[in-house]
Length: 634
Image 1 (cartoon, rainbow, N blue to C red):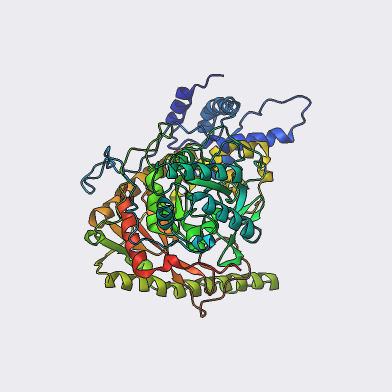
Image 2: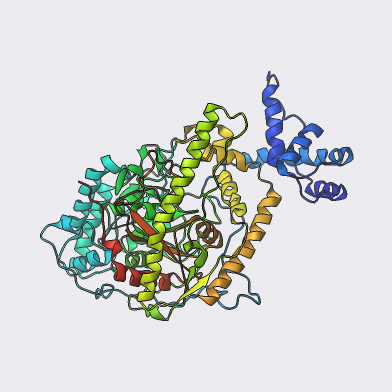
């Protein structure tokens, strides 16, 4: 049936309606009425009624409408609803993107000048002499002594024939098998593929064909990246046997660089948290806790010395959070720097792929191999990533988010309510205790944040105080869940969402259902607010080149929405006097590790300034050496 949208919109306009109702609300109400009706044969969807309009108006936050307005709307709304089935019948796969593309660069205006076009040149980075490391490493007596070596060190040893890729690959495969029962980070070992690749790498290097610093280096993929011949499970129940016939672009590029794929790593189901259909991925520093997520296995395996580097993804914290919990270094690139073809889509306007490794320089070496457009992901742009280990970072202007380093505000505790029951009193006391514990943890970790500022000043950095713009960041976050609900629409409509491991109030099945009641107009309005956010955050990077911040929620939400790059790095270990962790890890907080666990720091930069960002972070790591610490697993 053709849909007369013009008549519908005209009727709305004449009725004085400024914001059309969310069609999904009306569909849901009508579907409920249909379920209640007897079904001798497949019934037609019941007509939308004035009463349904009243309920939908309340859910959408518009109206109330007069009887005359509702009368005019009903015909158009019933016609509009009839279009849903035709679209749903297409059975759109997750790989089909919407007919719009997000690019994070701000439009030129008076407050933001320059940088409106991604920096680009045709010159490619050349490797071949091992210049990516400052000092030549020594080959150990035992290959396993290299478990926590950097990509740069391993690459130099392979280039100079001190070790073989085959020996290194066998060592990492053995460690993956040894520690997976404890940490649960492997979904699928790609052992046969890996050993064949390693053998080929050794032959090529022996013949003088060297592909660069990743040649012969074992790595792992978050299991939302397609790899031909192996399952790609997305960590989710119901998808355990899913497979694709073509490798993801990032996998292809790492193959071309000579890297060795040894495993597909766990992710929380459909890229949320650290719980997947096989269990919960663990933090190597404290295996009683989860690794955080959703790049759970990627961070855990790197931290445990079971792979040289891994690829993760981030939509709203999925590189940052597990890097914080596990003490790894994660580089979330500028949105659009790395193509996502062959990766599970969660949010087309927010998903980013990036490396998780032991150092900022390792992340830079990986990003050098995977960035750039592929002709398929239309959000991927042609922009330079020119990694220079000798970059003169001291010329960078460095800011810090001043208010984020202030003492945490005292929590507001709940007072007893009149006629409070014993059960209510217990719940209130538990909530208050949780608030006080979170405050104590933040106050303790602040000493590491302040120490980082002192260290930067000792390095000669002049820190400039800045603040994020005051915008309704959390009000823009439903953009993510609306796109995610569309990406997994069939799960909700078919009821297959029941197969997902987690079914709580904060988990995907509930989020997907809620997102169906998000009005299309409000989605567009939130995107318009996002345009303001891009402009205003970009304006900060006209004043400074780098921003230092704790790895906290506000900047995490803000910069994921604006597409700015972030580098998350370990910033020390908590002492024996650290607050004890809660008995239960609910997965909602990254700072609960307790004594002997890592803390993190985040550096931010302007769009496509990922290389200077990595250079600055590398300088900090060379001055602190926190990235060289690793957990005791045995």
